[in-house]
Length: 151
Image 1: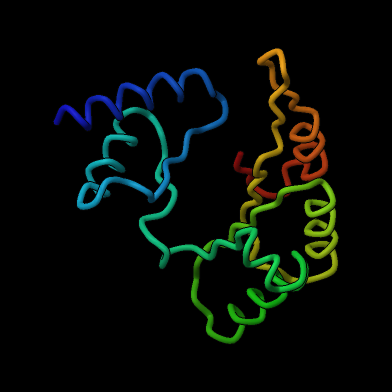
Image 2: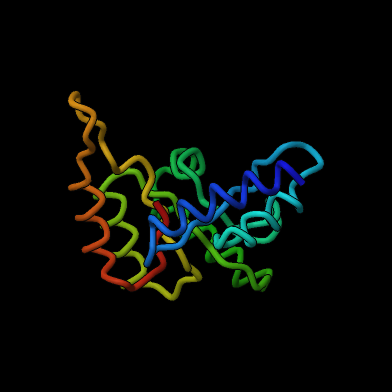
């Protein structure tokens, strides 16, 4: 109960500060406590992301590298989903504006199952302690509300 209270309290503070954006939790929790941790996030005003590796397709940086690029990775996932027909959301991790542009070009030219674009490490810490968010802003402007974004 103490753990849940702490998670709910911190989530509430972050959710209030982030509004109108929402706080998503991670599936990475303490062993055996995933469900109660996720419940605490909901109580605090956050939203649940995934329960495990089975309820969403997540194309991460290592998948993109192995596939030979973001377009190849997305093509493979779309082909699999058409063939197997599972009804799951698809999230793609992007690390650069070029990857965002390539992904958006792909979605313009193809029927896709993409639901969310993760903008990973697009905030650069500055020596004075501030953050340079220009790349993040540019990525959000490029996406222009066409897909959910996650930072």
